[in-house]
Image (cartoon, one colour):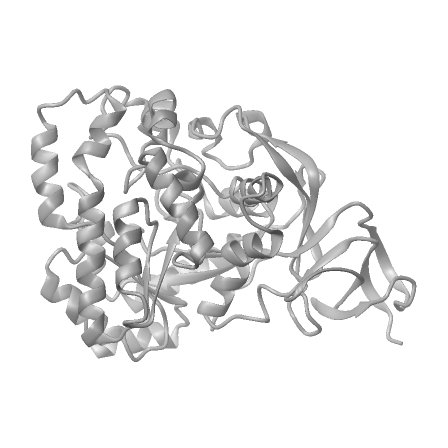
Length: 458
């Protein structure tokens, strides 16, 4: 038998049909084989995984770092180091950048920048830009993993970051869906009704800007639910591979249920909506502001039920770091505060904690944050599985261990604005992360090298 580079022995390995007590052999950056204990070939390195669980490395399909712009918020290096610490081996970067990633030139520039700096593997979304076939095809040729649009207007002062990405006009939304429908790539939509947002934001001007509830009242669930309903109705005609981003509310879950089976659409939610409520936002202040807002316990309960029922089959981070100075400058001003939390280190421990609490089983938890995304984007089983020939991307976790969140324990550059997670103690701990057979995180230290990640295409 051919010698192995690495043998992970003694652990429980998560395979597509569940956990198995097998040894996992890695060679040349791929899974070389699965072996009954004691039957594997010799290996240059042996990892003793007794008492541990061996998972495919996490694939996060919704991530923001905005690089190379805004290095004060975080860089490709800092945020992919944080990803490695969280058991994430592949991330999909969204197209908000300065300028927006809505042209072939900007897509190529970002690809090269990430290639030089990323510690883990990465894929890039593109915005459809000028809605021409020429622009669309050029970005497909460059290897974009999928598409992203907003149904909201560009935020004030940020038009260049959203050029070709923000389509508040419904006719343009339909044009985008129709243009992208035959690309075979998912179209991710941040869905909130522009008209209703304007209405409720105007009403909220009379409310206390320091009150966390003001943010939710300025962007209530109806804004999301109406936008999603319209998109799903449009998709009856467009037949795009539609994906609804960061679902937050019971109302939107009801819309998703109502349109089930009408077109090829999927939906995601995020840990901030599954593990926090508006009460947590009130405690953390503007540091916990996200768009769409974190809502109420009834909404959180509806999201968990949607996961149980298969209405929602994806959980993503929507990782969005900001500089401490930016958040501090907006103290007492929820409407003016920048929206986003840095969740890349939280997602895997949080889902393991949900497993420990009996919310769902380990296979379902892993499918939600990894395997389902890899399938949807045409990467499975190269990513998202530990089968012979799959990428040797591995997260070794201790299901009985603890993860404690505080600035001193986090790797993201935005650790000082992660107030939503401070003080949380989760049952489940990432012990080691392996990318293409090489350790990139082990025992609390990031070991991956700058530029060690690879650009991932379909």
